[in-house]
Length: 393
Image (cartoon, rainbow, N blue to C red; front, side):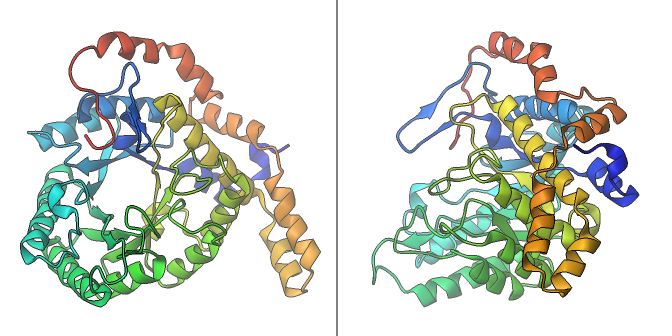
């Protein structure tokens, strides 16, 4: 059982200053390909999403940013949205593009063989950049559903060339203080090949653009058994890990609460991040986000629980005796080194985190405090009428 005094001053600082970004779509209704489930009190616009995000931050103290999705979060006055967020202690952060839901994108967007459709997709990203200027965001995040279902359906090489040319035009539109973040996913919705399926493809594409183009790693976007922490190391060594999206999956891209499927994997990933001094976002430039959809559980409690899961594993890693681990590694003490990692993972950090929250003026039990606040009951009564936000809307 660990307490705050067990942390070094630097570890204490890192844990105290740790932050996570929230995704606006996490507060909307979600489900499966068969049905999207509605929940009382679901936000009807981006302003109400910000209200819910502010609740997560108020009780955890570590989620001061929200990532917007265009056109899902379109609004007439982005300046007003930014002011509304800042009044509630929330910063509008990444702007995510959507070029995977229009019928025109049936055969691809930035990779499409039709130059008119590629132009539409490029212009959609330029629109996102305009929004970035109004919201103060410095990152354009791109995930593509582009790919093919059958061999011979299209030229794989030509699609990669189209992707590069499209990304190059979008990159050139960015301001000097803005960057492009390219996310990858090994399959879905395309079943034969995906145009950006892995970290190598994403890395190759961004390296061809310039220094302000980086890679986003999503925990759920890998084949079963993939050693994700190894990929983290490779992208950090290349200086191109721009963001890390936390979630969990049991089969495909489930987008379940982070740590739900394999908390030890989350611990191992954070170990590599901390070992590389990448946890401190203002210094490393790596943005950490919860990219989740809450299909069955309540959304705000799900986000709170997820943030606490990341914080808990971070605390465990920060308690690790890294000098002893290095010594064991250099001595080729296989079991000794593994034992140090294992002991850190099983350390009880709940008392430590309770102390940390009290130090910040927070309730030591964030989830319990939120449930006692009555906020869920309030929004269920207040948010009647209108159209609830949902995945795809």
